[in-house]
Image 1 (cartoon, rainbow, N blue to C red):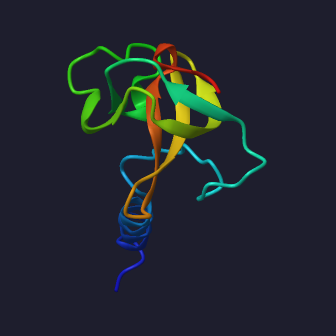
Image 2: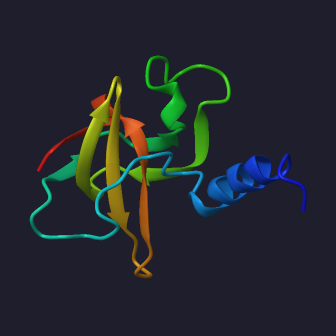
Length: 107
């Protein structure tokens, strides 16, 4: 392998290792009791790309995954108009991602 291809391979490997939904949103990877909690306050809160912090409504920012009203979440950091949340699903899967900050309130 030539050294000119090495940086590209490192970049590709790092992108594959990072979940697309989270985009640097971290709530410690699990539902820990010491994290602040929040509750979704809108009927449906779609996850938003982390790169859309300044304009969550822009084209291509909304993801298919969403939370429903009254879902309880762990709160991570805030980024502009987005709130990092972690959600423990019924099947035990834990999802981290950004939702509009206006769609969640402290619980």
